Image (cartoon, rainbow, N blue to C red; front, top):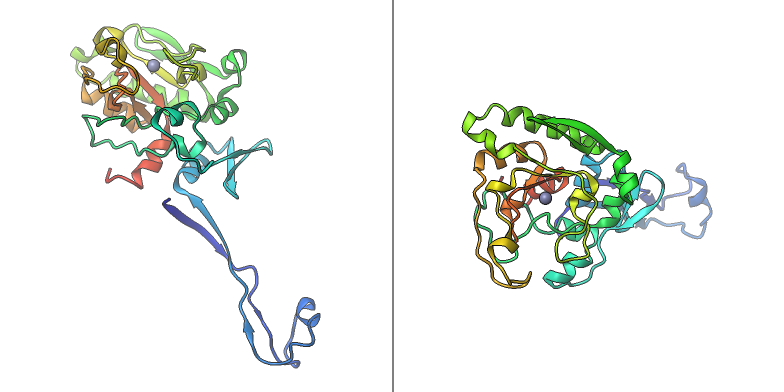
Length: 281
Ligand SMILES: [Zn+2]
């Protein structure tokens, strides 16, 4: 695992020294150590995984720290970071810990995803429910109205998600007129599971938007009869310019996934930040 050392805190480096030197109470408590001998104590090292740091940096209202393989949350509770289990592709989708959510770097130079390359498609519901709402009523309370071309849509106000979507809309509006057809009939909040699974969709938390389905492709539509573990045919009609504007403001694109969902954009600034350490983007 790649780690960054956040701080090295030397708790104490105790030197056993001659009696004439000033000593602390603790050192005086061991009078039998009369002679020399430097006894260095181990320095306490707090190492925070890149992914945990990205969560703390991007969701500071909710994720306050990291300690002993747990995220420390604002309400005083904790969430296990890494369950240290080896998982198959499907197990990782169905039972992800927080670390799994960030385990596949989102590489903005990849336009043709290889087999099972789905960065960001794995979601730890415990963390998302904590930040955005544990049920439909609670998630709904966190929504704010955002002007989206000819529509007013609902998006989560938490973590700056709605503000980021406003910034996306502003920049998309500056694209040539030929692009505007992609933004009609967009949809956002909907508490539901992902088709063919028990996993909650990111739409449940108000952090995802589907732009115009007319020009969009979904892996199940293009690969009828195929399952999640099968080999798939990839296709995408959403222009790169649109994808790159979303990414600039903290969103990932379902067009980057092997299990593509090209209309889908999801607010995941944590993954984008963590991935910058692991890709050359
Ligand atoms: Zn979607």
